Length: 168
Image 1 (spheres, helix red, strand yellow):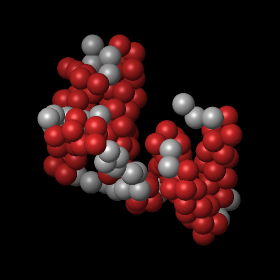
Image 2 (cartoon, rainbow, N blue to C red):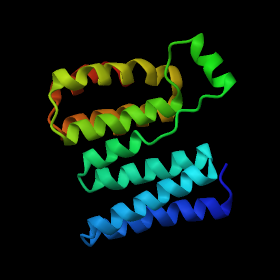
Image 3 (cartoon, rainbow, N blue to C red):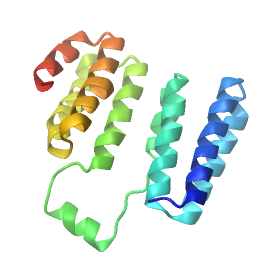
Image 4 (tube, helix red, strand yellow):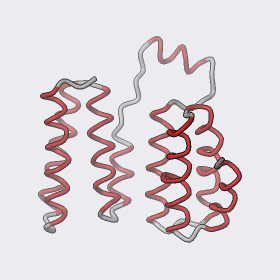
C-alpha cells in the first residue's frame, strides 16, 4: 500500500503531466515525467512505481502518444530478488503486473496501427493468461473493456471476433 504522501505525489505527478500535455506543453510534460521517474528510482517502491508509471502510460495513451507509453513501460523495474528469481525459475507464467503491462502494450500497438498479424501473439497471450490471473468481474472487465473494446475501436475485427467465446 502507498502512504498518503506518496499517493498524493503520484496523483500530482500524473495530473501535472496530463495538464501540460492538454495545453500543448510537450517539453515541460517530458521534463516532469523524467522528474517523476527519478523520484521513483530514489524511493525504490514497487507500488509507487506501478501506480505512477501506469498512470503516466494512461495519460500518454489518452493523448495518442503510444511511443512515449511504450518507453514508460520499459522503465518498469524488473525485481530481481532471490525469491523472485526462484519463483520465475520454476514457472513460465505471467504475473498480474506483466498482464497489465502487456495490456497497455497492446493498446499502444493498436494506436500505432500495427497489423493483426503483428499483434495476434500478444492478444493470444492476454487471452490465455487473463483467466488464470483474474476471475469474476475483474476478468470480465479486462476482457470486455481492456481487450475487446480497443480491438473494435482499432478495427481489428478478426481478433475481436476471436475473443468473443472467452467472454461469458
